[in-house]
Each structure stands twice: as structure tokens, then as C-alpha cells.
Amino acid sequence: MFDVLVYLYENYWRPDACPDHDLLSRKLSAVGFETDEIQEALTWLDGLAQGTQGETLSQSPGSLRVFSDAERELLGDESIGFITFLESSGVLPPAMREMVIDRASAVGTGPMPLEDLKVIVLMVFWSLGEEPDALILDELFVAPEDRAIH
Image (cartoon, rainbow, N blue to C red; front, top):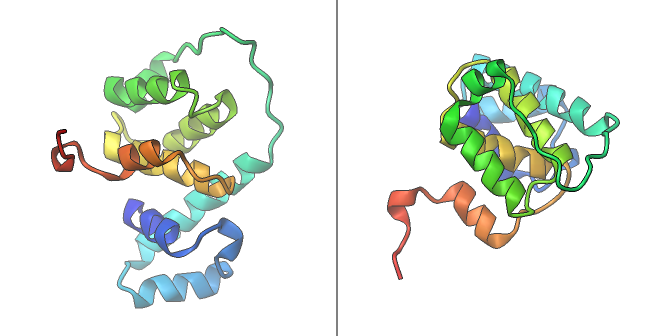
């Protein structure tokens, strides 16, 4: 599923640039994705689209997000650390953080590998028509072992 999501991010600049599900399924199938992987990704994207249309509650400045036991089990320490890093850096506002957690829950396997969580973060930005900061984009796409040390 995550390969399909990355493909969509790289080939469609916004969700509304994607064709309808039937045509998109055929296009994805034509480039080599499996039918179940395509359906899983499209279902996941439908949930993401619903999340972007919901009402968000404001969060008081300085408030702290406490993860439930189920969320800690689902996300794992590394992914929670990454979410916290993005939020404390001012890159991931609380409403987007909640969308990331919701979409990670929709995957339903834990602990979530950090690379999968990064794709989810990227897709949340994409779904809102926002481009992450260049340094964050680098963090989301480049594997740590591929980074040049200066």
C-alpha cells in the first residue's frame, strides 16, 4: 500500500488531480501494482479525505499530547518520537498530528515502522495541498544512511 501512496504523491500534485477511483485503479494496475494493494491504498485515501473535511478542535498553546496505551503500542517509540519532533519543530500542527495518528491507526499494525509513518505524514501534507518545508521533505524521503555528512 505504501508504494502506491508514494507513487500517487510523486505523480499527482494534489488529490483533486487524481482521476476517479476506477480510472486510477486501471492506471495503477498498468504500472504494475497489485489489485489488493491498490484497493487498500484507495480505501486508506478515502479515510484521509474524510479526515480533512472534519471539524478540528483548537489546542491551547503549551498543551501536551498524551498518547494512549493503544496508540503507543500501535505507533512504537520511534514513530512517536518522530511525531513529537515534527510537532515541536512547528512543522506538524496539532490537527495534522491527529490526522497522522488516525491514518496510522487505519493501517492497524504495530509498532509502525518509521518509514511507513513518514509516508503517512507526507500524504497528510499532500491531502491538504501543502508542501512540507524542504528540510522536512528531505527527512521524509532520504534514508539516514544516504545522507551526506558535512
